[in-house]
Length: 69
Image 1 (tube, rainbow, N blue to C red):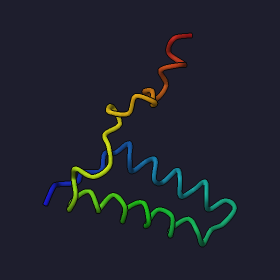
Image 2 (cartoon, rainbow, N blue to C red):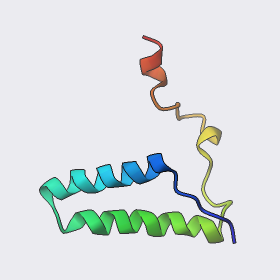
Image 3 (cartoon, rainbow, N blue to C red):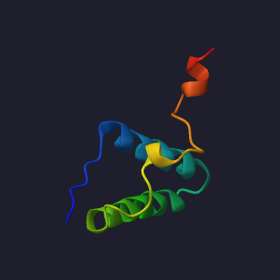
Image 4 (tube, rainbow, N blue to C red):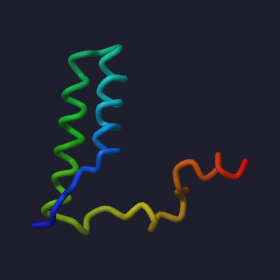
């Protein structure tokens, strides 16, 4: 089984997602974050599933359009 490590940044994003959703639907916020954790856990058993970000030609790096200004 592969190792799955949550970065500080990823944990911060999850908290931000939770807080954003909780503003309108408090009961949905923890369920949403739990679902994200569960989906990420699938990677431990199937680390080759999906695609890696850098393998998607239709995606750009975060902030790249802002950096060019």
